[in-house]
Length: 560
Image (cartoon, rainbow, N blue to C red; front, side, top):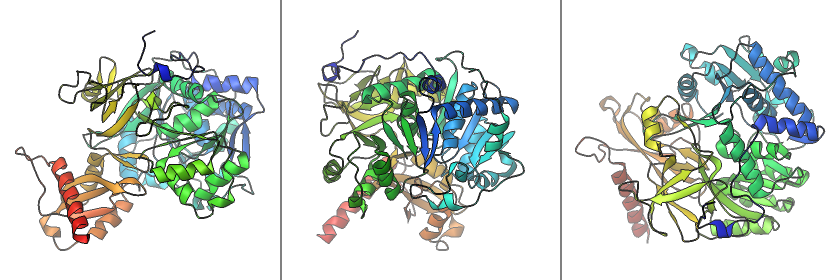
């Protein structure tokens, strides 16, 4: 085995290389056989055992087959965290069909693009979200629509505070199959259609890019199983662990850390539809939660929650976060709330999955650094000029990742694939450094990515969406510091002549609320008469960033 500079930091109990032998749904089936009555999912007081979860996944897979869905097809999931998401996810994989996860905050234009690009012909959606899909009309071609409600698995008396959308009555649609009815009429006897872990496509995970349109990262069953299994090994998860499942399952962090890894290790997932500080605190206390993987923003919200003193969070032994730098003062306050917990952070991408990049060693945290490469993962830093020469320890460069969780490529985008994957290495576009011990620090982003509350926001995509507004002639979007969200998008807009002095910034901000996910929306808009451009006419984004920094510096000096 090749010796890596970070191996001296390795936990003795953790293998350096891991080779998964089974798919994710097969691991769940093994747990159902070994401990059928163990609780797999808890949803506001409604419990589902491993036997029930395994049978429901088989019923869903069988229902897909009965609906004409074949191996290699794509099924899109448009849901908040709920048992139906887990059942659909596992059932789709068991059927040999590829999962496409859609952000439940998406508006119709975003949905239209990802559904059409993935060519998904089957959609599983929450009832209150389906009307957003229907806004696109016949521009979205679907053969099967399966609809469900957050109330389908909600007990009469929920044990945790629920978000407002869960109080709405269930809605049915004549063109859609009912999720519970589909399960009821389908067979539990369904053999897995996964025939090759490394070749069969399991997940099409959409990310962003420099073109302004999201790209689907193709991930295999092997990659999913490795990420889930490696996470369980790294954190030492057992059947006794209780995981707080509030980080969105459609995102690779929530998917791997809060859904897949817990189910591989046979633990219990306490599912929360979305983040409410009181629900998270209550769930940790009531269920004696042991593991919570989340975002920096969510940690800040919990720490600042006025009634947090009412809750005992001391059962947590693992608290992992990411998406934005964690303020030292917040870390200290968190340590006092969870004194038995190991705190750490991680770094990964949709193209590499969570646990496919960098994570903090459980006993060796180094301030200013995220951690070291994970199980079976290799990382190097290369110079920004050629992208081929590995730099010395402590020097800045682009982060490259190699490992079993790396995507096979981008869906139907060979040129983008060729640019991102070279000789087995994923060129992340992120700038970082690695020290002599193998600790990695993230310094910036070669691609102009904005991190908002843990979500990746690509300026080019926001610009593409803003261009749909009839008043927008030109636009540049950058990230500016935000004390709560880490960063927030700011849009610099040149108006079309017919709209000058006839529309205010607030009107465009209002328009964005109905046309893009909330975390992407520019909170600040500045009208400009001109934007800095190159000789070729391309907007110089870096110059816009520098102008904004100079404006902030000037304002500070004026205030002083």
